[in-house]
Length: 139
Image 1 (tube, rainbow, N blue to C red):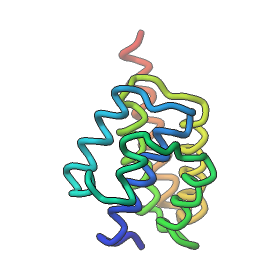
Image 2 (cartoon, helix red, strand yellow):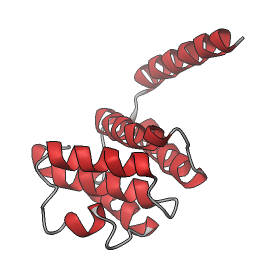
Image 3 (tube, one colour):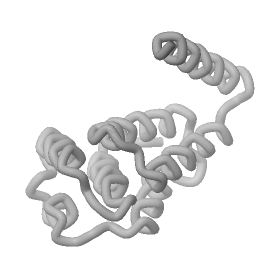
């Protein structure tokens, strides 16, 4: 279960997600700094070196933070909330790198593992409906 005490871990995960493709894009940098400021963590001694790109975050660190944040048996809601938070960062620069897509995919797999079949089917139908609408708008 994700609690308020995990806010710092969430910011760490977002920073890690920005680094996952090897570099932080200007839009991601701005997004991260706004989030850190809003959460009161922009001057936190643990967060600051990563936030201001003094120390890069390795991919395995990011995945370790995700595991720590979600715990051993994450709920569907926790996974969806994390996917939403990371998606906001990833889409901030208008480009989704392969590594970023892998991270989102991994989180979606975790969400599916916990989902009961009726909830999963409902969520899948909602995604399919959104996709169909998007395709229709594109045509």
